[in-house]
Amino acid sequence: MNLENKRIMVTGGSGFLGRYLVKRLDAEGCQNVFVPRSAQYDLRKQNAVEQALNDINPDIIIHLAAVVGGIGANRERPGEFFYDNLMMGTQLMEAARLHGVEKFVGISTICSYPKFAAIPFREDDIWAGYPEETNAPYGLAKKMMLVQGQAYRQQYNFNAIHLIPVNLYGPEDNFDPKSSHVIPALIKKCFDAVESGAKQLVVWGDGTPTREFLHVEDAAEAIVLATKFYDKPDPVNIGSSNEISIRELVEVIVQETGFTGEIVWDTSKPNGQPRRKLDVSRAEEEFGFTAQTDFRKGLRQVIDWYQAERKLTPA
Image (cartoon, rainbow, N blue to C red):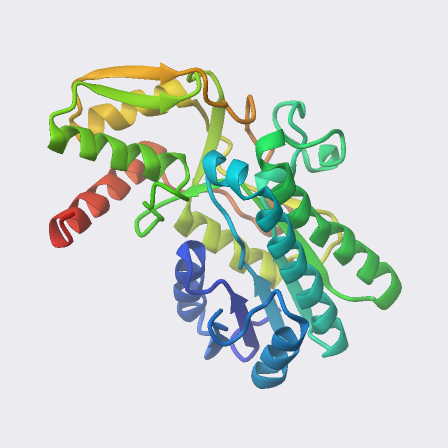
């Protein structure tokens, strides 16, 4: 699919991944990229969804918009995470079908995988069990786009694809401690500790879980490639295939940020899913995507960006 002359609607286009995706689409030569703002279009409401499609008249919808957060936010707001994400995806895809949208690109989450899925996570195992409890409502709400897209393809010949990205990181990430994910949360904790002279750094869990991380620029590249070249019903993992334990991640961030105190593991707090590592062979085979960013270099990039931001906007 040639994207240059398509009208492309990117929900969540002003968010972390969305900003990078919009830049990547611009580099692709796309002249008509539209980002519906939540203040104008509340995508949880059917009339707002219909208004957005009437106003924008897109050929392609890339659905990034989501209510997201780390373990703490998922524990505190499971109902909100389920309802908001489910309603946005379901209503948007139905409206896209009715409006004759050519392609719907649904962006899901690694949280939709079973808690104890075999390592590495293969797309065929997506239904092999229940997700990890703390993020199950969010993960299941997002996974319904897969069910809906496959059902719509079967009944209406609607071209919906489903991408499953791993945890993302990069400059301009969300560093709000109430809703941030593990990398920005740890970076902020370390800088706060260094500046305050704290002797200890408290981290949730016991450090044994593993995670896989993908640089946000790589994620944007994968989405563009899939939008151009992938038109099948099967879900596709988007990741780097590099697995690191939380304990090792903390050690790296501590070293890179200059914190020299003691690491205290708060085992009264949940670990989250035991392991996360994707099989990324389908993305390479179907549309030629492989991650390019070295994790250590990417992490240094994030730390440098955040450090500069702290200097610009001191607490």
